[in-house]
Image (cartoon, rainbow over all chains, first blue to last red):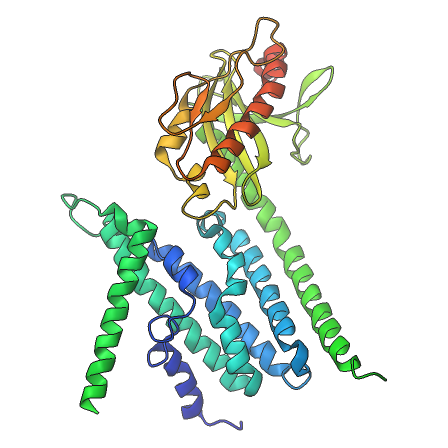
Length: 205
Length: 218
């Protein structure tokens, strides 16, 4: 193993927190805003993206010395689109209702800039083991961010979490939170929190 | 050898591998997806025909009318699902319709009651309409209410609809055969109305003419 465990662990952790794709890099906003209306949709979208990210990072890393520079984006997109199509079929086979809920957004994982971004900036320059850990970390970081938004929006917008009622019946759901505008409000709150944390860290340093 | 060779080698090589992978996954998941879709269709039949306890598929062919669908035969656009209540009485027919939406084909299932000459329920089976706008055809409660009781009366000759089913602007519905559309989703609302109108125009006369076959063939 050319890479010691701590290096790989670092690739994993950086995506989760320090370089979180949504909260720090502010990438992949389209699915983040659109599919975070319930916690279950957010979790499914996050895991589907993680799956694609890990596999595409692995394959891109394996073929990185075989693909000429001029056609690398074409080839990466081809690899990504292949795994997205596979995920699409697998979700249809597992849960048809979930497939209906995620709708067009599954196919749109292809154009999620996090995936092409990691393929281009990391996997195409690194061996397969760190590339897989990078994909896993970024994917889980994306899932974490989607869950942050999805749980908050579902609790406030419907009084439920993963479909289970968590607030007293007297609570009047804020329907706006389940609508697209609620996605922007929630994202703004989380971004505010992350930038406040960053400032405090910088002030302390 | 030209310098283009490595480009072709990389793209064709990756393309072949990717194609092979997609075909493999497609073949592996195909039977499971088909089973899921059949189950979802069954559940949808019960939803679009209120009060139905059992259903049976029939195939239509000119000029004989309806014949029970042979088990295992593919359900294509000539197949309808007759629904019966708990006592075994014929309630109505669930029919699949499809039409071009804004993004892709929209597939619908609607319930038609030959006795009342009405649409009694509708469900969107598949749509890829714009999230937040067109996809309201499957999530908007007010839009769904249109189809709880939508007039589909035949004309005097029982050959065509007395009034075409049309979508109107939201809030402008005045007649029982009009569909109150969704604001911001005009194309999707019209697509549902057109698909429904075309399908009911074709099926209602057939179902009226051969209703006895659907009632007896239990």
